[in-house]
Image (cartoon, rainbow, N blue to C red; front, side):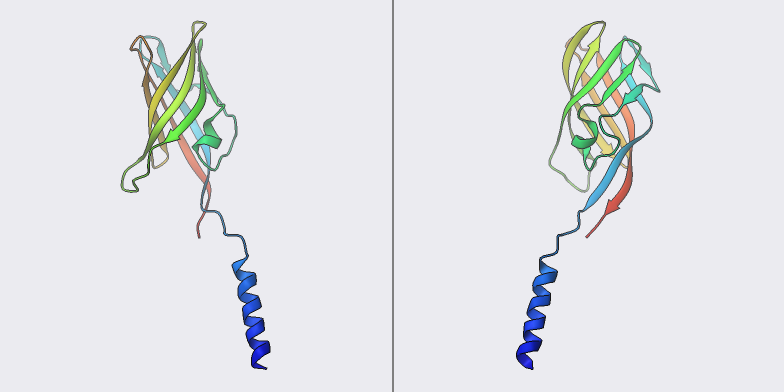
Length: 145
């Protein structure tokens, strides 16, 4: 009887140990208006945002391939790299874009900060003209262990 009990316990612990761990984190989505400012060119508090994906599990999934435009300016997000995370500070990193303005394309590296849903990226063109992007990221569905 003891052998049967131990066998059942061992089998059940193996079954529970083999279950897949639940994911952690949140599904993210851009929410609301997108603001794009190019010093000396203009700004839009409601730029046209064409998402590559409506929902992503991280910034890479959400942003890469996204296009933002107003007037003749077109911003294409090509990459994003996060800095090492310090949980006491906002998330930070680099956002890589291609800006097409008046028919000329330029690759620009921007620094970003993300805190409590607010995503802000700042960068400079080769001619020192500043460019900044501001939008809100909504956490749709969050998972925890």
